[in-house]
Image (spheres, rainbow, N blue to C red):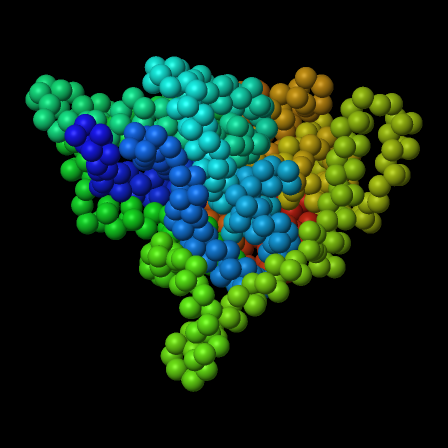
Length: 622
């Protein structure tokens, strides 16, 4: 009788509510990273739930049969996850092949790594950043999380079997799992480098496994079939209190815990995963009220479709925003359209891929294959098959013929100009520690355009520019203007880099100060590549002190963070008396002829106006 009681599995409907919160957090993190700063933590929620449910079912199977049917386990996982994943890969690849061929680069590697659940390591190996939405534009970036989960599905049943066979005692298994989660969290802290892109530790299986294994651990401590509904009222109130506090902490983390904070990687994500464990435990307990409170038609609907919603949100955003040249014009309308598309396509994916995928077997596949050739009559069904075949062939063409590197002649020329600018920028830093003879020799090594000194400057301003001690810190937009800026400010030291984020600024300034390369005046050009926070600039300003600082705002019409960044920069300029805002956004409005094809980086014409604006602002003051 006891064994039967233990093996009677219980459906925990409240977990759909938690899944709903998680997937909405992730979607809105990608839509509004400045407002929902911790929405990325939705992935940790999925991991804890997954670890708990998988291990809970494995324990029930072991208690019933004293063995694990590995074949059935892996087949269930494939039927659950693969159909929707295949759908998003095939449809997205077909769309890229037909309508957005700039994304064909590395498509074969992306698809193969996604299908083998190794995409997280593929992105790490290729140096791709989760946080750089400008240079790492891909509809498949978010599939890294499926890699971590898929690898765990492959590994964990084997580890579970070995633990049950050879360790046996629950106490020792719990100790082993807890130690393993701590080691994973320590790996995250050890491998994280402050001031650099955290994508390696964000993507790594070794550094993210603790969330999944904390869920595994909970299943040993808190098995769903051993929890009683009838508990003392005081215990019920206590459980509800713990659940409420955990949900509140998770909500606060979703709103405020920016993925760029050091705390996240020095134990913060581990602590949040532990908070999620408490919340899952309370929801799973039939004696508490949170299972009922998180069960409603909306949450049930969203929770059941959370996997499809997660899969489709990023492709929809990337494809849609690429076609809208100025996303910041009517931003809320575009956001609403994106949400409608995400939910509509996810519903189709849920019905046609997820639901039907669960019923797949070899006989059904065989019969479906035969029907393609035995029913040639022109019907609605055959038209659907023809459309499906067209999509599949288009996807295969794109996947097979994709290149590891693919650039147009214009893009190649632009990249070469950036490379030349990078040399000049490095030489400007070397000038700070070389004599005049060395400076003259070094300058000849890289090409500079003919004089571009702005004609609007007076002779007095030109002389002032030639003697001004100034340092520029920027991203690729400022990097492209290196030669032009040095025509006006020959003593300018430029530290600019492709892909640089706002949160890099303080570390760059600290290093320049250490090397005695910070001038009396500082020019800042950051914000092209993604969102930032006021605290990022506070740290930067703390390093720069009372020096006059000139802050360039951004022209990024095709990225949704443009408005947020420019509002933030205006706020910083008003906050600090020594900061002057240079309004590149306002000057460049409507000037499409000033920019490269991405409408972000100034071309030769735009660089003259970019330099003019900087020079006029800095040299306007006596």
